[in-house]
Image 1 (cartoon, helix red, strand yellow):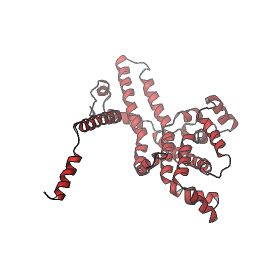
Image 2 (cartoon, rainbow, N blue to C red):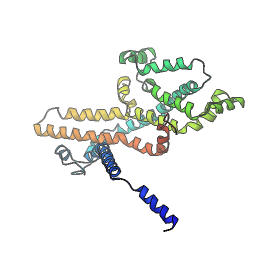
Image 3 (tube, rainbow, N blue to C red):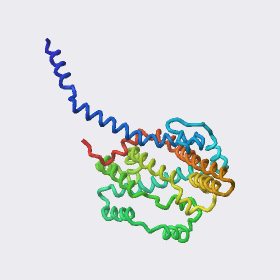
Image 4 (cartoon, rainbow, N blue to C red):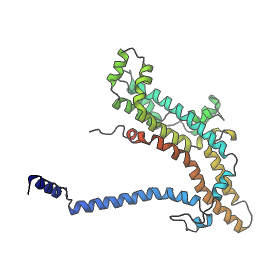
Amino acid sequence: MSRDAKQLARRRRNSRQSRSDIVFETVVVILLALLTFTIIYPLYFVVIASFSDAKAVIGGRVIFLPADVTLENYAECFKNGDLMLGYKNSFLLLIIGTAVYLSLTILCAYPLSRKDLWGRNALMMYCTIPMFFGGGLIPTYLLVTKTLGLGNSWWAVILVGGVSTYNMIIMRTFFMSSIPFELQEAAEIDGCTPFRTLFSIILPLSIPVICVIGLYYGVGIWNSYFTALIYLNDKNKWPLQLFLRQILVNADLSAVDGGDSSDMARRAMRAETIKYAICVLASIPMLVIYPFIQRYFVKGVMIGSVKG
């Protein structure tokens, strides 16, 4: 046998897995498959239940495929003529809010990432305190509506909690660990001002973290309804989540507003399945946006990890 054939046979023997390795990998694959199923199935069930008849869902006939397929649940949602207004308001809030949040986060994180900022540790401590202590709902409401005069305004929804300290720390960590400070010093030697350094050097190198933090902010703004419920009285300014909540509340109320028992039972079942349609309608925009920034997501979420 030639030397090459002996080396190939030796490699094959070394590459063979022992029985314990095979058992271990099999168990790991089974556990991961079960974990994946427990995560994906509830989302899948919401979708198929939204296209199924209420009796089929309540009766437990919807398991892996929709039963008695119908669009009545979505038709009930779109009977509310304000749904498109809610989508428009939510998209405007999403764009304006995400832009404001990212601007404030960047303007806060960049100075705190510079080694030459005097007192940055004390400032960082000052920014961290609100992560653990808050003023409470009533003082915040009085501050926003009475002192600042932002009641019934989108700015009340946007500016309350405008900067997430956690997201600011993530961005600060990225600036410190992924962009050499010597690069900033070289820019200053060439005559760049701090703002020119930020916009011409730091931000172009920070696209991954900006996309990830923007996704965090965007999802939070899109799913938020409580802040708008507290501060917005004008229905024309309501985001989508408030209109969907109104549809759900009206469906629940119609199920108990009197009438014969069979009609009440039918309305109660319809209210139960409308919830699934509402979940789908509220999730579609984020599902559409996510693929466009997916390539940045993996790199962005690894910020601060141990590098080999």
